[in-house]
Structure formats: structure tokens, C-alpha cells
Picture 1 (cartoon, rainbow, N blue to C red):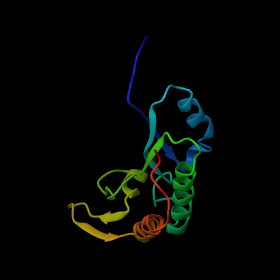
Picture 2: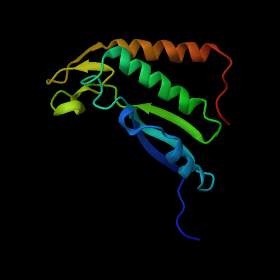
Picture 3: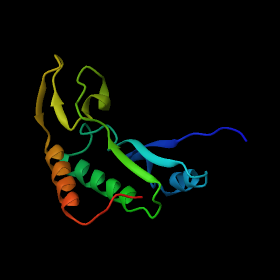
Picture 4: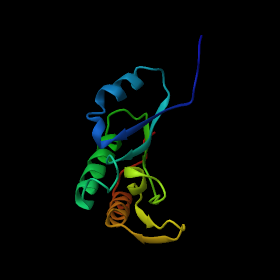
Length: 130
């Protein structure tokens, strides 16, 4: 009876606190998978140092990746490219610099840190969640 869906999506940023209650509420629904559709430090790199952003993202990705529920299937970093034409923090979320003309610039230090983490994780015996 009622509504059905395939996946539950949630956005989670550094200013949102502990995700446990929200994830617990989502897990109370029947067997839908959960994805973190957007995650990053609030305002990207505008209000935090590159190191603070890296520390937050690594902790967040690890929290979701190691959660005991096998229903958490993905964590997506928001976002790949900066958007300099937007105002405020929205312009600073990218892992890669981008100018107002759309020219893709250099990857930020966080890009390389995430790349190294994923390569390291792939080299270990972690198996995908079933």
C-alpha cells in the first residue's frame, strides 16, 4: 500500500551535525538503498582551509562507507568544478578550479587527496557492499 521508490537520497554537509538520526530514520523504511547525493564542507573551500575540507570529507566518507548498514551505497562529493559565476560558497565547492569563461584550471589539493584515498582503498581488500 502507498508509495514505493528505489533509492533514498540525502545531502550531508559539515554544518549539519551527526548524520546518525537522519540515516536511522531512512533505515526505518523498507529495503531502499541510501545514497549521499551531495556532501562537502559548508561553502566548500570559501570558509575552510584545504586541510579542514580534506579532514571533514575523509571523515564523512569513512563514516558512510563503514556504516554497518549495507544499504548505504554511495557518497558523492559536491562538486567536481568550481562555479565562479555563482555567489558565495556555491562558487567554491569544486575539487578543480574553473574560471568564469568555463576554462578548467588546476585540480585543488583536495582532488589529489581524494584520488590517493580511492586508489589506496582500491588496493586493499575492501569488497563492495552487497
